[in-house]
Image (cartoon, rainbow, N blue to C red; front, side, top):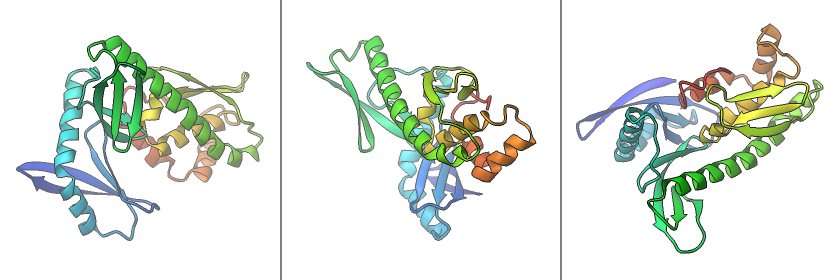
Length: 242
């Protein structure tokens, strides 16, 4: 991990480069306005800096958006141009007035909100909440398909998953009910963070406390868990109990 700086139109941009075992370069502007670039070890710093230069205008807009959102206490308006988070990436919203079906659709690098009344805040909020919940159900269960098999050898059976809006937790588990509860807001974080939260809760079925055995098992199955946890914290300073 290394920090770098460049200037675009008189504005300084600070970005962090993280080397990972990935195929492609991934540039993200996090909700705390930090710019992070994940890249393979084979890609030179010069190539990454050029990418940041090419995306500089886009980066500045995203930083300004998140700065405004924090100053506005995170309140959403569901208007064209507003930025929404999904799986760790930022998507601009385009609101389109229609006479028929109302829905939210992710198409390429944009989110589209089809709604009959552009000024009906409650309907727009409801549509987005429904969309996020549907995506969360799909992604969380797919992630469980990947995360659960490695712990089955330790006698950890696949639990059921429920979704809730929680102010202070990303996830929790009930050993007696064999159930994991996940925060719907988790769908806005990168997939690597979702994997971390699920594995964390799964391990609690074997090691109830955050003791040496718990972290030793977690380290064995997910050596980069500390990095994932650090990334997760950037998505909400309040949701830190994990």
